[in-house]
Length: 416
Image (tube, rainbow, N blue to C red; front, side, top):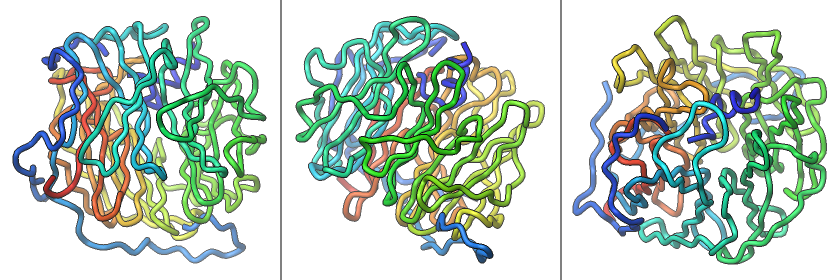
């Protein structure tokens, strides 16, 4: 049950009270919008040193304002959730899950489901590349490239009440084979994976017991953060890692940074109840969320080294409560791209209980101080974002709560 609560917290479980009106079969439509959608204007380096110099990351001042709907995968009476999206040597690959029911119980295993794979060469045309039978009864959550060039997918299976993770690899994006990753404990559930130039860090659990792991090559894993109870959130960048760890006896998160994934150093701690970091080249951005009664406030922070943080501003979130019971938006994902940051929000409060997660919206920022709400509509959660050439590709879904569509949508910046 503790693991299930963790899943809800980290938004890995897709709902309840469906109001979807989806197309009768899965469809991938290239450049579905006849004209671009234009957004409305909104009114560090993890290198431990004795005395790092704090400063805010430098950034351009613009982000794409024109977006096109490249593809939609939806089906009446079902629900699609995006797990991860990566740029790979063979183009773009995304994984997720198709559920046979739109609804989701607060606790317990999800409805009957199948892992999904989608592929695109340039972000404008997408196809369903799910291999027949390979991912039956699997929820696909994570994707990362290992040192030898293979792509690894990690998903969860339900042998009993609690989920257990399994891994598959591909060399061509079409054929997937089961693979064992050395060092991951038996019966472990992989909650998060952060991959960067210095390797990979994973937050894993066996039951309620935390097992943070590091891998240099993505195939062989070792214990890290041995004295910590668990990882709340973790990000990997060009020069290391930043993580928010937690102790069940302490409310506030502890921010730590590492240049190698093995040796970690305490960082200054921005105020807030939840800390969500993301890389931005050699620098770092983060959100710090404070929950007070029925209100949520979000501040943004920058660092050049992952250790010393300075406040950049506040993230002004749109109030779009689907229930009228004082739910509020809060950041649930933060995707660090080389020149911008993309955030996905969820509705905190009664809109997110147990395994029920209601999507909020999607936001983008060039500098971490000013944020623009992307024109994807309400209940469009940015579950994945990549830069491919001069275009930005974002994948959204509605998580598990109320929405007009329970499908996965891929968006691309600029005209199709």
